[in-house]
Every structure is written in structure tokens, then in C-alpha cells.
Image 1: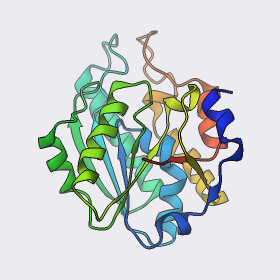
Image 2: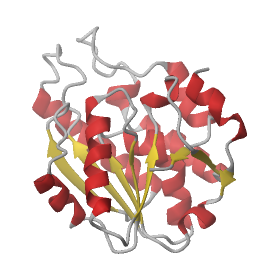
Image 3: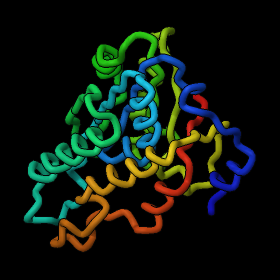
Image 4: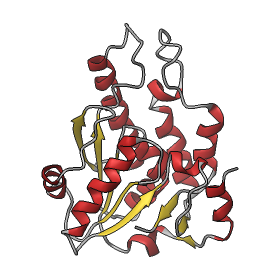
Length: 229
């Protein structure tokens, strides 16, 4: 456990219907796989009840295996984009997707990028972005970028979803999302699409990233968390 997870003991639960109403759902992911880890069940249940779903991936995820010769950055980025598309097709078939393609570890948070992002977010949406306390530069910059957008868009609501911050001692006001059994099953299928990150598919870089099985299980078993801005 962590201080963050310990603090969730008394967090209130909320249904997808009460969370979203009839608003569009927009998930803004720093990397391909964050959409599934942080909001996979939410996407599934929102789509099932008819909420328009939009998923925006900010970076190309191409630096997860810098020592691989078989998977240079261009090949890895292409595969991660394909993984992203397969996962979203399971979670929210027909969702509007955007692949921004910024270099991994170089997510933008400047005004021009915020102006570009706001054009992708429909009126009245509830936007969910990575948490600014996640210990990863791209997660922090995507949080800041989305804050810039929402500051200029009073029609939008904003929430954050923690990924790596779940395993720290940081905390914030939180709600736990009630997910259907079908959503949990779909999330597991979607996570399996991200083979470059969840398996040893890339086997020529011993130092490359692979999420530990216990963390994968955590994201599939533990409820999704929405943090207040």
C-alpha cells in the first residue's frame, strides 16, 4: 500500500451516470496505455450508456526501450499507436481518437499547444487528464496543459486520474468510480493490447520498461480514481 491508497479508504463512490450526466467524456493520455490504466472502465461504461467518447494521446511512447535495436523509436511509436487504437476500440468502439505524436518525455504545456488541444475538445465535455503529482514529466505537463485549456473554457469540467501517483504518499480529494463487471473485463482485454509495455515482447533491451505483474493486477482490481482539480 501507499499513503495515497491508504487515504482512499473513506473516499466516496460515484456512478458513471452521476459523474458524467449526458456530457461528452474526453480522456487525455500522456502515453498510449495511460487511457486504459487510468480510465479504461470509465470509457467502457460511458460508451455503453451513450456518452460521446474522445481519447487524445499526447506523446508517441517511443522511449520506453531506448536500448533496443530491433525496435528503434519509429517502429516502437508505430506499434504503440496501433496498441492504442486496438485498446480504445475495445473500450469505446467508434470513439473519436487523436494521436498528437509529440516525442516521449517531451509533452508540451505551452500556450500554443493548449490552443491546439482545445480545438479537439467538444463543448460541455468532462475532461480527464493525468495527475500533476504523478512522478513523470509527461504526466505533469499534460496536467498543466489541460489546466490551461479549462481555464479558458468555462463550459468544461476537469478531473485528474492518477497512474504512478497511486504509489506515492501524495493525496487529493478523490472519488472512486463504480464500474460494471463488463467494464472490468473489457479493461483487462484492452490492457493486454499494450504488449510492448505489459510483456517481454521487446526482448533485446533488458533495461526497457515493462510494467510489473503486480502493478498490472492493481490497475485491474482497484477501482479507478477521479481527483478534484
